[in-house]
Image 1: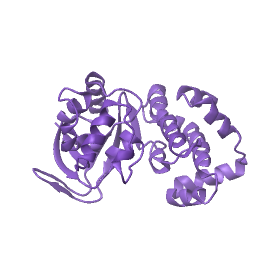
Image 2 (image 1 turned 120 degrees about the vertical axis):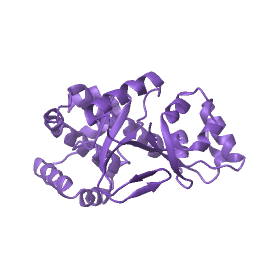
Image 3 (image 1 turned 45 degrees about the vertical axis):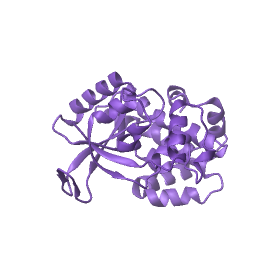
Image 4 (image 1 turned 90 degrees about the horizontal axis):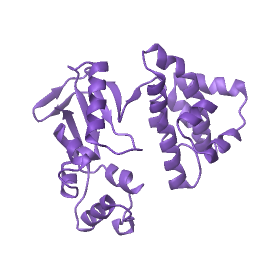
Length: 264
């Protein structure tokens, strides 16, 4: 646990909060068994506690320690293991910024790191998914049951084009160059090009994909850029150029959604 917290740069304040949680070994193994057999039941159990956010952090850190051998058995390195679980530090910091307490609020996402269902390879994260329904968009049909690789963009560092290229190259080597790589994100939304420079890292990332559709009602862009989606965009901060441009764009009556793209 100590090695993991150090490797993912979890803040000393968060570590101190985790260490205050008192759970018996019997209870821990009972909850681990529940998590592995029925995640939704595990989530309901923890959400029923008043201190559920720090409990999620406590359990997920211990689950991560238990997942180490699973990573190595799948041919993943220690570096990939620690890089992947760095998401815990990011989401813990987000939790503190939003709620004023250390813990995990986005508990469904962090659960995907355990199996592992999501791994980080360099700058990007990847999730192999078997489609539960057909996807039919212009010039593309993906049938139910087909495996595709979803590309996710973790926070924490610049999305520079060289790092993106290196990550995608590594992913093609791991999953196979013939696999379909898809991305659903606010970075895929065509309208975002109206508020960013054409040679920006976001623009270069989007150009790697063929945009196949968009959800106009998904407010992920505001959640990612401002920390939360508010009813009145006038209350959004203006600490960065992207925040200023996005705020002005929203105040002028435009909206931002999410796009779905296929890697070229």
